[in-house]
Image (cartoon, rainbow over all chains, first blue to last red; front, side):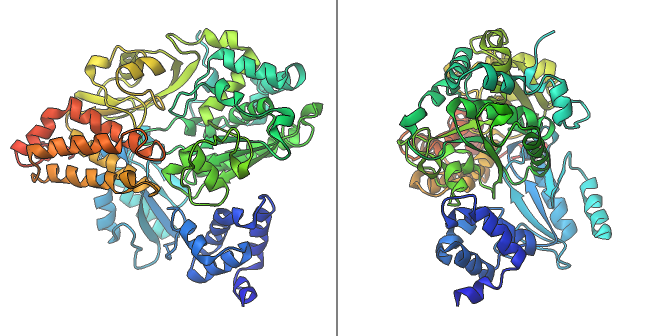
Length: 163
Length: 433
């Protein structure tokens, strides 16, 4: 039964996870890397994937769930094509991130934790992004966007066209 | 011309320095010197003599930290580890990003020299997941090092071997705490571990481990290549070397600059940050990230040295200052910080897990005009307890309470006014609250 579960992972995922397991003294030591590998391929980590990874790592699904839900960059619900990580920490607060948040929410019709109806964007808050000299800032997918002002909305529109 | 070793390869256009340019500018001289002419003992002496203190916030003497690592047969069988803490998540801190993105070899060279000193055979860079560009550039630099023989087996024919891996984190501020970081590297939840045992003796996988901040390790690069006597000439005050200082908030020219240790705060704020933006007045500042106590105008002539800032009742922390202006409510700023720390608590200790959200609730009552004068005393009492050393397992809660306690001290009239005027008045003036 466990092998059936593990079979739900792709050969590529299994091979990448086995590589990480080879670098640590215990199979469950690769837990976080394994979650991120599956997320890289599927966008998020489903219950089925979580159980399969736990089987591969020879640990309980419950323990792996405790790890998965601890880390804010492991997504346990489906997310959009791109995740918007809006910095809500102190320097961005001083420079008005709350206005940016209001504009994005109104423009895309989503609050924190929600995904647009067309599945393109998920909006999440993120702790200080380490670009405080260029505040307010956010990440859209892998890209950092700085000095956000009204044009942040045009940027999101442009991306929608380009996708 | 003053020496600026940490930023000598940083270019104004932001383009990265890879191996060819790094070596042409004198890079890897420190590693060559350490492996050919020095011993682990003489490297340790050099770092101790330099008086280098940790640049991640705590300011602990680096040489002393390393001296607790068991050497030779005392270490027993198995690996020893060196870890670069590149999990830059302290609110208002943006200094390590500069080096990670633009001069990755400076970090790698410092890591090789440091790992040689403690005779570690495996090194990790623990990088926050959002630093995507840094990850790309570090990966390229690591590949270049393996190809050039600076990493791998028998480095430069010295007989010393080191494997170096990049670990991309899955998030959470608490991973910056060194024992929490070690748990994250072991694939676990990042709850801090009790100390002792200290990581120097029993760290990653129970083996001797050193965790140092990125900027600390970059300092080692230059201490080894140019010597501790040269290094000691760089500071202006009590502490040695240079530091990446920064300023953010409503200043004219926010940024990060390499300046001598002991540079006066006023000089950083006025000459480098360009003073306040037009229409904004200085109210106060956190000298080194979100978990440091507020200082105010009366402290502007203090030198940015660990003990000078410590004596003034705050901490130099990461050296990146967050500036509060007169148009933003001090309570609002403290609420934002408390919300951050409450959210980032690992949840292990009750005062931290439940206490910090309570502080946020209390601050909300002030904001909404529901607080009384007694609530000021309550806030004070709770903040003192949550921040009390020994009441929690690690330093997150004490750090979280530093801005709260110091705001109560310096901005007391704002707390009083929220009570007497029935809420926050800043938004009526178009400010944030």
